[in-house]
Length: 266
Image 1 (cartoon, one colour):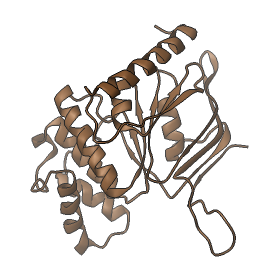
Image 2 (image 1 turned 90 degrees about the vertical axis):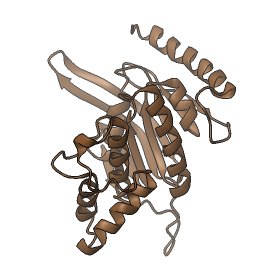
Image 3 (image 1 turned 135 degrees about the vertical axis):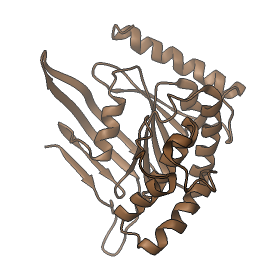
Image 4 (image 1 turned 180 degrees about the horizontal axis):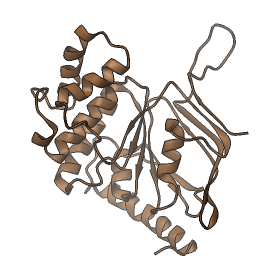
């Protein structure tokens, strides 16, 4: 039977609450019914994300990366297997999904309101979060006044407002230009290290995966299975053009190409 538990996972005997994972995915499979019959998207995925760990999910288009992220977020249920998380995760999409009729600060305050933060505390907390993402002074700016990179910073601040221990990110920088993406890689790395968040980050960009993560997980295609994992033992902060990043990226790219060839994708 499929289960999806968005609750703190406790280990040990009575009186103890030692969390050993931010997310635990156990033998998860997912199928959808479509016009052509049942589509098997994910097959027997097992993966743990440790507290404070940054993991990237990498794979070709259609391999089920975003489907798996949605399952971890609790937006859908697995067909089989189980998922447990340390509290309710925060989710950040490729599109910023900000409300255009609200200011940057009010978008963040709305997340705080939904979390139950008292009204008299929301403004100050929103400004603190804007400072954290280096948008101090932008509380009153409308969405149309912000660049693409600034909108994604606000979206990140809104996700952080949920004070989740696990941040799920679905290709959040894919639509940005290379320079803006590079800057936001730096910012995300800094925020992750300062907050000790656990991050599960979906991307199809191999160098992005290597630059950001402590561990890169490659999914095969049709259906998605874990093909291989790499531990990234390159000191942070990293640059996308660093030799060590480039060398590991070449190795992972070759594996990815092999998976694409094996499954007949182009």
